[in-house]
Image 1 (cartoon, rainbow, N blue to C red):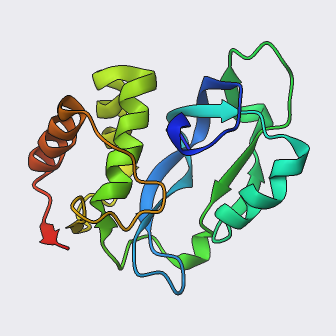
Image 2 (image 1 turned 120 degrees about the vertical axis):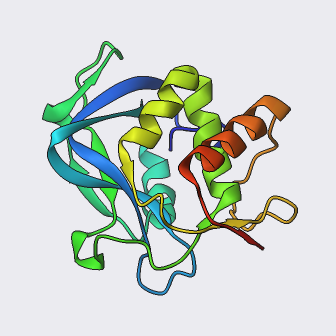
Length: 175
């Protein structure tokens, strides 16, 4: 949830999480890969922490239904000025270590847009470096986005995502 255009949880602040990396996985019953966090004692990832109003927890749990909630309060650095319980939603490890379904380009666009907004081009590069599963094919659904929280993209954001995929040698499927 690094893209604050896709949720109303405020305030949101930049954070670093030790002991986790990212990967693309396919939850049971899903036709698309999702981005998740994976335990890795040697890794550190960047993201956002955001306040969730008590009345909004049910909707957040429904949004993240395929994920388990982990308490990462002690392994997260942030500059919110408050001491709070911090939760991380992650696809359970029992669902394997690889994505069996393609990544939606509209989903990747939203993630990249959030990283560019909050961390700049260097942050987007760190996101790629700390994420496994880039061999997963990518379905180009930009013309008719299938990701429910798809966002309009500026030309420079679209170009950054396209360059990222080209640099990774990604296999693009027409969707």
